[in-house]
Image (tube, rainbow, N blue to C red; front, top):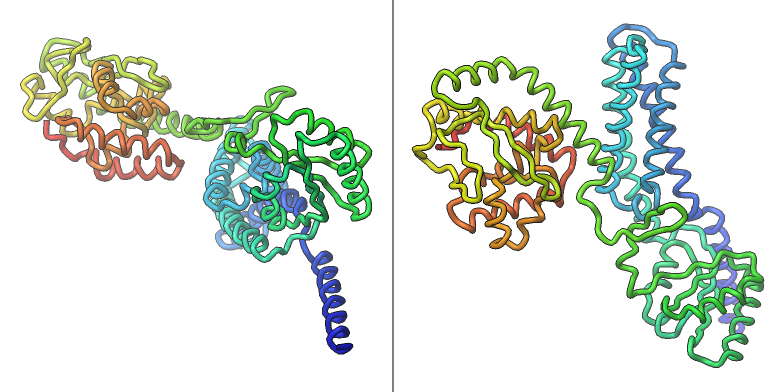
Length: 484
């Protein structure tokens, strides 16, 4: 019997020693965010050094002064980390999501890089940097960040699964029903928090009994040296919560109120407006940063397109004028972002200029189409003036194709999700058109399928998806005949 007791004692001592070693070696949970912030900064400085030195060593057969590349990397790193911090991208939950990490990192890095290039061009300091250095820094920096964030997400998820975060003692105080049903204890242990004691409080109970339990909670917090206290109460029990806070005010510890399960689904995204915070219960399809990036792509792409295609557009305008009487451009009211109407520009390809409450869709072998119009529509050249709409901000290069306002009114009554496509600017090309849903929609089912593809695009938008659609449109779609 004594041997068993000795074995148990040794086992207990061993567990305590192991726990102490774990606590010394484990990473504090609150250390993750600043550590990743610093790692991103250092990574970009290293990327700048590697890009500059490698380029000079491989192509110029020399070793350059490293200081300018350290400065460039530090400037880029400071901007990059500051923007990510402002976007709450260093929050632990965000770091656990590799897809979100890749998207945020890519968007911010592209934005920072374009911004620094613009500053260098404006101040005429770009001569000091070669194109090889610059392009190398962009590619190496983005590659380092994507790989690092993917590895980080894996390491953090593995650390959570194995309980590798340092133990932090906490105290739980709450209603019996919430304490028994809540997943908070499981979540606390995953993130290294260890409940030292749990106290059940009845919000409708006797005031003396509640006061006695709170005195015991204060004593337990001091005896166990807890680092924080969590409260689990329904938020409508305001008087009880206030009395608990008054009783705990004698402790120099942070007290956290866990969200009520009735409202927690609304609190996934918190925003500050002045001195008050709000919960974003519905997210816009694109963040401000994503909108800025998409608009930048639109302006650059449309401006370059107009510049390169201006000779073709001038010849087309001349041919239209020579073939038949009437305007060169056909304009029509279309529904744009948030349902706002705008005038769309197209090269005139028909003998009529319909823009009323009833508009007949163009169809195969349509007698209204001119001889020149047949060629324009087969080659999609009639769509080129929409680049002007993109520059004006009415449209985007990629997005749901705009329909005539008369058709919008008709389909909004027949398709429940039709109006959701107004959440993004309409595009010259789109995901639906790339998948074959273009031109005439003879049946309601065809229009429904087009709307499904539009909504999928809105939900899954990314910078890379836009590039994919644009590149495939140029390669596969430009000269594919519409047939009418």
